[in-house]
Image 1 (cartoon, rainbow, N blue to C red):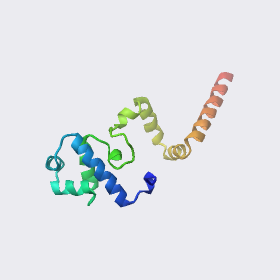
Image 2 (image 1 turned 135 degrees about the vertical axis):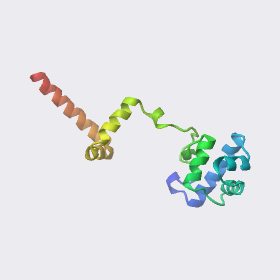
Image 3 (image 1 turned 180 degrees about the horizontal axis):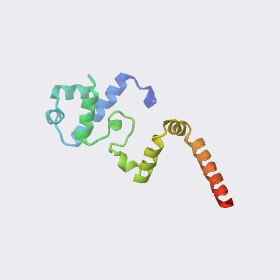
Image 4 (image 1 turned 90 degrees about the vertical axis):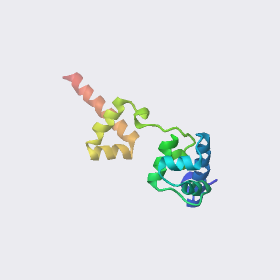
Length: 136
């Protein structure tokens, strides 16, 4: 199978179709039941599950939310069906740090561009400041 980033649209549709059908059945829903829950028709669900068509972003979101499975899983980006809320992925102190850093857009972009290099520079600068403080 090609690398995930090299998948064609048809391959993506087929991957989505297979995963949607499996997760719908695993969750115990019929096509009409799922359709009603997400506000579409059972014909659309059938089309998604056969790879004939692909849902809109809104419908994809509703499928993900209703079946309690990540969009990444449905699209084959990951094999983990769990939805990871941002609050579960990082601590509150890490979130606060990211929020603070994001207020200075230039610095934030530099940090994102090369995190290891910038972290090393920040650490060296911090050590220099500590040395100066100790001399005073």
